[in-house]
Image (tube, rainbow, N blue to C red; front, top):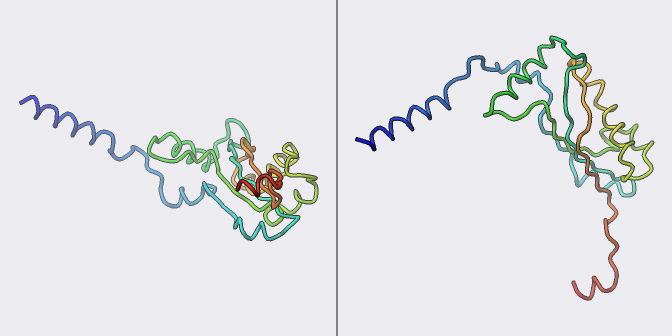
Length: 160
């Protein structure tokens, strides 16, 4: 009898966890949100030689004006509040900077120029997000160039 009670309690727990939400996001509402993930072609970017700069970043979204009643932001909040969905207020992108944001590539002296890259990427996506009533800022940034991060010397060659 105890086993039956345990099974029934687990069953109702699962029914509660997987119940339909009170307010589901429609397909058109979901499609109106910015892409959650985006990756440019890494290999194509590295073929640019000295100009290659591939950056992976996370961008935190917020409404353009605090307290604004923007439909897309409400959809993002509703989707993000559901534990079964991804956080749509945090975008994860990987871009080839010279191809996706060419204005940044002209103004950045090196890929370690973190503050200029962050500001440049923020500015590059600002107009797209503004149309949606949103703004965003880069929270994490990691960039790669075609140059190796560490120099390879003869000891590395002999040991490797």
